[in-house]
Image: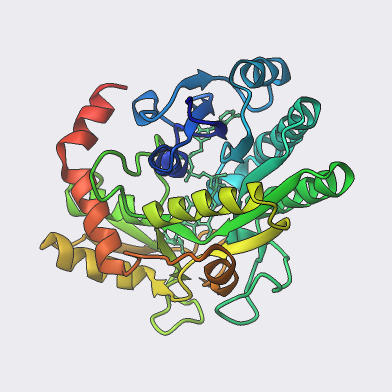
Length: 334
Ligand SMILES: NC(=O)c1ccc[n+]([C@@H]2O[C@H](COP(=O)([O-])OP(=O)(O)OC[C@H]3O[C@@H](n4cnc5c(N)ncnc54)[C@H](O)[C@@H]3O)[C@@H](O)[C@H]2O)c1
Ligand SMILES: O=c1ccn([C@@H]2O[C@H](COP(=O)(O)OP(=O)(O)O[C@H]3O[C@H](CO)[C@H](O)[C@H](O)[C@H]3O)[C@@H](O)[C@H]2O)c(=O)[nH]1
């Protein structure tokens, strides 16, 4: 019997590729749909790669007609908070228009289930931490606003058509596949942990800490880091729940615990056994001081546990990936 297909937009990217691995291990055929603007063909190892843009209706239609997926997991999008302030229209184009095009094709094809990659950035500045899903959404950057519009569009289409959906609001995905097959390899890296690793290895000069006067115990921002492989597990569980008739809803995917930028640097120095050369810079526009999520709803409804998500395990996996053979061979193959 053939494994059932699911369409994974953005399946060549960091989180999408880890989810493809988890889906294949759970018996699915993940069909990655990606324009490779920030992902890699080498990261698509557990199913076919269909190259295409999320805004290209005809290409999407053709891919759906070929693979006839039971469901869609939608990761494709622009992701960098800082960039979104410089190029808001690009973010609205890909994250909003792209999601609209995808929904249109799904409705036309009668696909009844969608798992959407949303974000903690939809909340804005938290009134209290850890934030539950009922926390007000008032995003402070175009990235978060574009994802919130997409979330609401999905809910409206679900209400009108009966399509089931689950929006997963990730906090900070981090780490790498513990077996070393894939890891975080954004082309234009802006994320804290990979940049700090590159600074520790002397590949990038000094690491810049953005802001030292936040209202946090050490003055640097606080984030809730969640191991990418266990984030991936939650997608498999959410897909199963949706296909079993579970109600459409939103889940936070975080640990409920925060770590500061300085905590991350300190932990990396311990894991790597070398210092991270560091400087302080102005705070980055659009960064809220603290983002920590309450994952209780996901834990209960999905029977999910965010394993391996202590800072040491996350950073050790990221370090192993970055310094391993796969990382250098992967980039050499681009
Ligand atoms: N990384 C995080 O910590 C984090 C946190 C919250 C939410 N998210 C969301 O998770 C999703 C995946 O994030 P990621 O970190 O894996 O990013 P990523 O950039 O590694 O993955 C996104 C993928 O989408 C593809 N893509 C971008 N624009 C496209 C387009 N127009 N058409 C087709 N494909 C396109 C890219 O090539 C890339 O492979 C995103 O939707 C992001 O908003 C990420
Ligand atoms: O060189 C750097 C890079 C980052 N930071 C700081 O490290 C923290 C984390 O920054 P990242 O860029 O790694 O991640 P973000 O929290 O900005 O955003 C990530 O998590 C969000 C949800 O929390 C989003 O969804 C988004 O897609 C994803 O990139 C922030 O306080 C940032 O100011 C630095 O100090 N120096």
